[in-house]
Length: 96
Image (tube, rainbow, N blue to C red; front, side, top):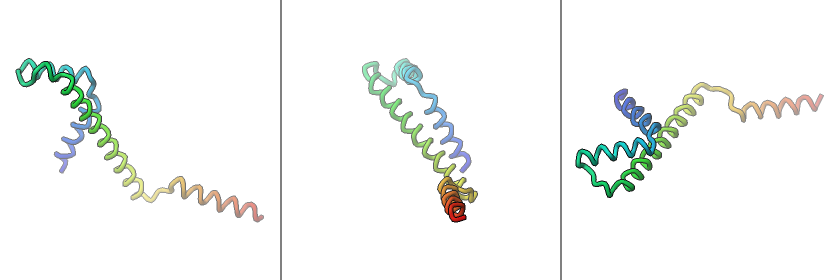
């Protein structure tokens, strides 16, 4: 399980640092190795950048969901809980 999480984290970090310049360098390496044709540059870079953006969004959602789950399990008062208490306190203070 931790190995899978490690791989996901590394993929996410790679996506977070992916820039157009890095995508172009990756493409140039593939061309040098004969794995891609120069004519496919635009499509390749667009695919890499789209994939990096999707991975970035997926990682952000995963982190957000985990933080929410952790906070909910800690039984911490929410903003709404505090607003509810404030309304009750205001009501009590007005009645006096």
